Length: 203
Image 1 (tube, helix red, strand yellow):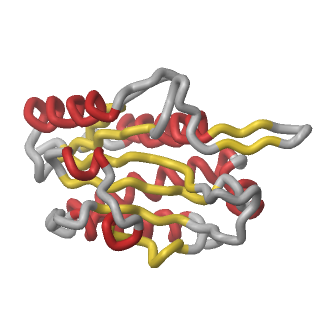
Image 2 (cartoon, helix red, strand yellow):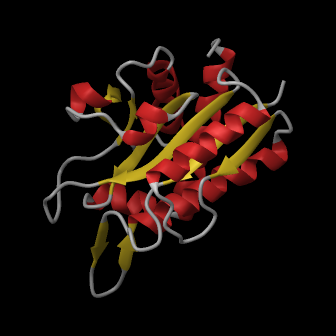
């Protein structure tokens, strides 16, 4: 049976997400998440067993409720909750101008049975694809345990879901990786392989 990945590029439109600038460049989270999401989306052309859908295809604002509605429609019409995963892609940041915090992590809903496995598989595969990207906060982390709050898209989606933070925009090492197109390709491969590992493991 065909598997489905619902790709959710974080932010968009008037919501630019985290951002940083210097006299030579300007970087916004919403463009990085869209770029990486498109790279994941294109991978379905080489794997006929996986179908992808995105919650936004351009620089537009999509409310969180609509993102969840897209997932629920896709899950009910294209497969089943066991055959579908929802991956929300983000770039991390702190309140500091620059931070020593760095690395990749994936949040899962604290009441999800399969969310921890999906988060671990994605973090593991991103790190396999990019050895210089460390795990942050243990890699796969519960929303309540780490953030002290639930994340809307993780709480309300009907399939297994995780929210991936692919590095810190205000860490120089992570930022250099994110500015590299080949690295963004590898992040996409890590997400793709992580989803497939999750399904192979019985998710």
